[in-house]
Length: 295
Image 1: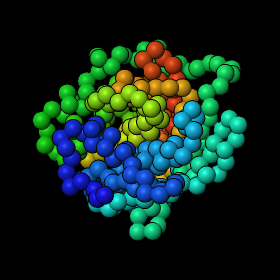
Image 2: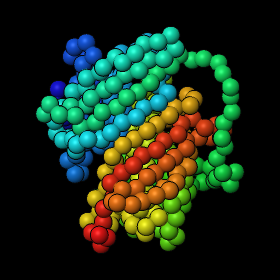
Image 3: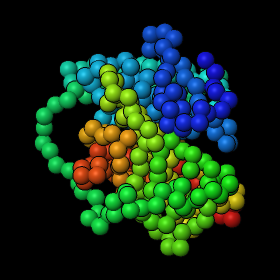
């Protein structure tokens, strides 16, 4: 199986397609990548594929509650990716897996994921800011960018997820106010198929979607945009906790914060909420962020 030269024209269907991994042996899978403007594998994609490979080796009643990973090398979007799964432990309630995503025999991403049976326990949830506007009142990327033919505009308007920034977006230029906080509504531009494994698929797609925006507050805080000349930005590691079920084909609110940047690295964090205010996931990611006019 080799990477498709072009997408089908249905961006969300293409994402579902690359998550349909081929099982080539016990605990061994193969997948391809979506084409990218820069030719490198999108980090959220290989993260979602790795989590899915891990989930294929545990009991269907156990779902991922946490994943921790390191992006080790840039991946080539034109080459297949091999996923090897190591079964670390299967206990009475929890299972742990390690996955290496390989190209040319070397890992481009390594994750450790933990899965748990659904169990009763103490319950409470944080809440999003009470003044958050509903997604229907917030302009989409398509509304903001329109028919702009800049490559960055094309990327965001044709993405598999509908993104709606509550604050001024930083697609083509810096925001007028430099702040490390932002909120983004996000929803898949398609429906996730129902059936066995659908809840695992939703969590893998949530991991995919999160990687699109995790480092964006760093750009906002330092008066930069995705079009900043010479910008070099890449995920280094990713940690994610799944607290409750969530559907990616329904609106989810990302409340984000970038508490630190130093040494050519920056930290982004996010809490993800359903429209009813229930916290469904927490995320943290450190990334490399370099601009030519600094350093």
